[in-house]
Image (cartoon, rainbow, N blue to C red):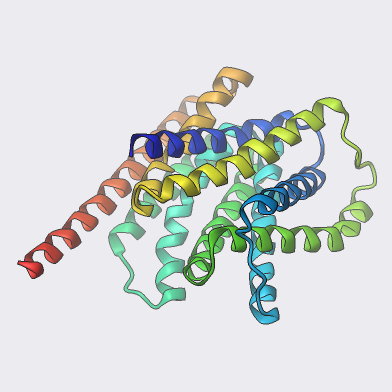
Length: 300
């Protein structure tokens, strides 16, 4: 069990580097995401040669999974676009609105009862983001892109939940990313049409950062997180994922000194967001314990 917890936190720490690497890579977000997809798909195929975890699916299911992969691509494009428009710290703070979007999307798409407490926590986080929007003049477009990225991430998670129930995570992940790679390749000419000064071939430094992003922050982090999930609950994993933005912000402060460009109002907004994330985590923990106690009484 201890090994599983270490694997979980290593995976989350690696995911925390994605924002920092997104700023270090000087390519446009379209080129960055395309290369990240390409290297990740190749690495997943190499892993498949050893463990044979990717299964062949019927055409209808395959197309459905690949279409969900386009949402992942849109999330990555807006995420890295937001980082390049503002900075890592503000982008990661805005991603906390994922909880708000999920509290609304999940009941609608899975026909569940809306938890109004979660909606309230999400609205409070939105209020924190609005406070940041008001004081960080010039970062408005980046903040809007980060909120769109959070919505897309929430939509993907809700849609992915049903897919994981019927197929292995390795199979779903490969076909989603492969579908995203195909989709992005097909629409890439649009990006080149509207932005003619795009650098398509990375230099050595960018290749190194993209390789780290693909192999360590995507393939390796995904693999060890799956191994951790064999020993720990999905609830524990989701609860611990709240540390990912924190890791990313600490890294952004240490590497880019982004704290020097932030105004006092940012810290008020960020504090409100952190408070709501903590409250949301406690609320989830309380609900889980309540269900466990009910089940224990029924078994007695």
